[in-house]
Length: 287
Length: 125
Image 1 (tube, each protein chain N blue to C red):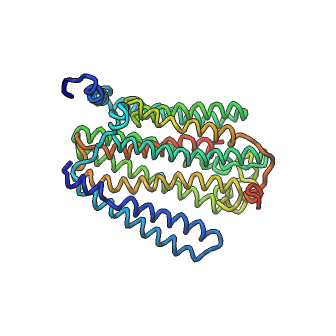
Image 2 (image 1 turned 60 degrees about the horizontal axis):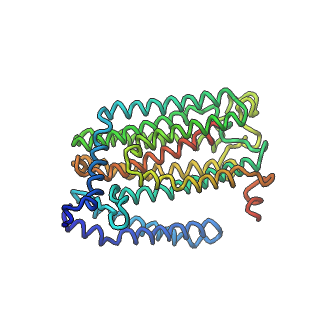
Image 3 (image 1 turned 120 degrees about the vertical axis):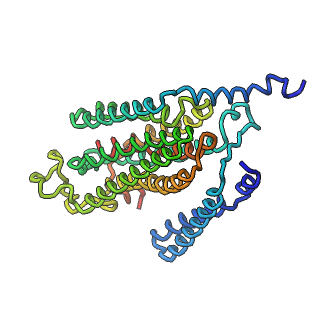
């Protein structure tokens, strides 16, 4: 990469600006929903600052014709085999594993504590399980297209790279649309509508307490289901936004046999989202 | 002896080059290989849906679901996330949270402190 772009990237204020914005969002949202509505202002300011930081980063990265690939060679020979960016991505994924580990362990704890009283979301979804299965296939297929995009870039095939990234993007959108539809149906109680002659769980119809719908504030079952699947959906949404950017850059030949690190690192994130779904699907949709 | 002549100093770079070459050549028919991995993932997904529809006991169901989930994660991490070809540092980094996840799932997730009705009771207010 050229020296000017290298120096500019390291001198950027985008990370600290984004971090401050994120802090404002978390602080504002937490207080606003807990009885301090005036903190919505802090939330909105945080959102604005985060967006500013994001745009700063985009405007600096997009014109770059090459990518950083600094090696961590200073501390130990073992680091010589891994780029700084890749190591940092793995550290980021490590923290993400803890986030979803916490959500899923909390779900299991609540469910174990409730015992037979627990009405799993799986029983509510069972009649429409096909949506969960389609979403699973969509994510698995998107992982395949993502890795094919990376290898197309390594072969200098810009068109194929863009095409595979486009497929990944569309599959991500499909996942979100189906998820949104599914939530809407569950919230409004459509999943156990007129066809449920016998309204009990053994017939895969709904428990009386969900007769008017299943939503985040309906019960602990609803809270754990929507928080976990919502957090996962938010990760898919972020991935889809990032994919839109990658498609634009790939379309102008931004990734090739020499410079494809960004695709590989984003791929790690996207596959990680897939890994999370591998656990979310059986434990929230199947059982 | 200059740095160029010192094999000890050169070794890491040579390893890196070898690692890169390993990465590029290990998977010559990569498209078919990745499609095969995708096929296995679909197969295991169908398997877990079919297992649930059989309505086994709780223990058997948990064993089946966890086993299939870990196999699927192995496929994704090894092939799609390239851990199979990455240097050990990447694999070790990815393995770090496993200890914490074991603590979360075993010590917290699967303990039953007593019957609870709602989140307000659990949180103590």
